[in-house]
Length: 128
Image (spheres, rainbow, N blue to C red):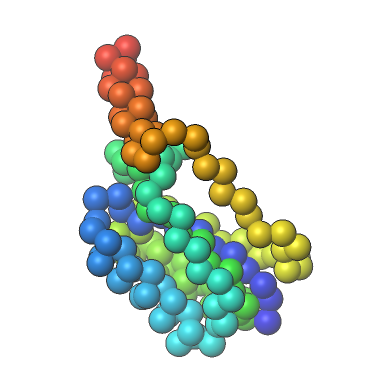
């Protein structure tokens, strides 16, 4: 069994219950196919690097797992067919990461980043 990481982005306008349901569906699919889920990280709602299906934000989820290569086509098929998932990526890791990824926090008041991003988006629209 190989080590994989998959990240998927869930539609930003779904409520918390629907987001959790999408995550549980992916986890259940993987365990049903014989994969072992090592880690689930919910990164939350973040700004996308570029628009995806006219969305500027998305809810990011990272999964680290051990699985056979036969699991991947079914996982990717699930990502494509699920309407709530707007983007996904699956990569194979050569070895277990020595360091855990570090999320860089922006200094400032909570919610300030989103407000600033929305203002910047509006300014971008006005320039066009």
